[in-house]
Length: 210
Length: 210
DNA sequence: ATCACAATACCTATAAATAGGTATTTTTCA
DNA sequence: TGAAAAATACCTATTTATAGGTATTGTGAT
Image (cartoon, rainbow over all chains, first blue to last red; front, top):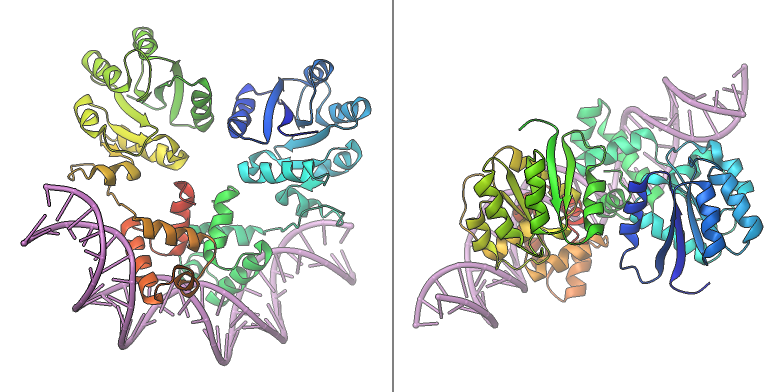
């Protein structure tokens, strides 16, 4: 497995594939060499091309994402697989664990997280998207990235901070004490491991929270 | 001209078109109804479909963006046109003024600005991208968005703020006084018309400065 | 040579954010 | 029904940021 890594991308929506392709155009380390619209398509591609990494949608027709994943792993154990899902619910986590995939990421994760996940993958680590991780509350495992779970209230406050509101203004809008807002802000900074509001907003922008 | 607005998108790179399409998928107000790879293509599309807004790349083959724009305006004066350019240089501004287009935006402007530009367009205003405006230093005109030009030093400071540095830390790194850094920050907030660092970082993220 | 702008610096006062705590109530879920 | 997580609230001290000024120096363009 050498650079640029040869990637297959599979999803039943062509437009989504196009979007992903856009992310990798001009990227030195990764190259999209195959596309597939169904699980069967994916397996066909493997027969004819060398593929280092497969990015699979869970909700794919024919064999779905996990089944396809298991089949790939059976015949091509060296291939690394990233599973994409639309839903933040952790209901698929067990399946993920059994499927042999290396990454499990939310579809609306954003470019930054996608690339981070791929980096983990090529380093032989397992990556689970932040938003997914916490909901499922999986025990820590080697190679898992640090995760943080933002609560509803915290997300609400981030959104207002992004609208240039001060703690006092936020307190007024949410009918809570300024003390409480500040406590939330403190917790948010700790969870995201950022130093101040600048880092917070940057994180939020990069991860589609605002 | 009623919602959803029917949009034609023209660019000689199919991938770029796909990217734009992705932005408008699921958007209630705008719908991409036509694509074109050259100026001639564009005019052909107009003959067969109703188009409210045309988004044209300057560097298009056959008739280029501006020429195509003039031709469209001549035959379909009600159509609003957005011109996209890759370069921040203002050399095309005169041509833009004469072309009758309603918006002039940098290609790497980002989703947020693209939508802002479209909003201006449908409201009958003229929109010129921030980064473009200042370089050209056009006199203010009705409907033009407020413009701001960030200096090299200001951009430098924004970059450091995005790295969670404080004014004192920035002062140390740039070998200048903290007073100076604060003066720059003050000027930046004014230029960008944001209230605080949160707004500043959000702007910077949305506009590819950081 | 002059004018505009960028970059620099200083001062003061106030507002806001951050960091360190502790602690209670409410929700949620097993 | 209990335990854990989330949301709430309060206190204090310190650091940073913001807003209002003014002012000097260098530089690039006309």
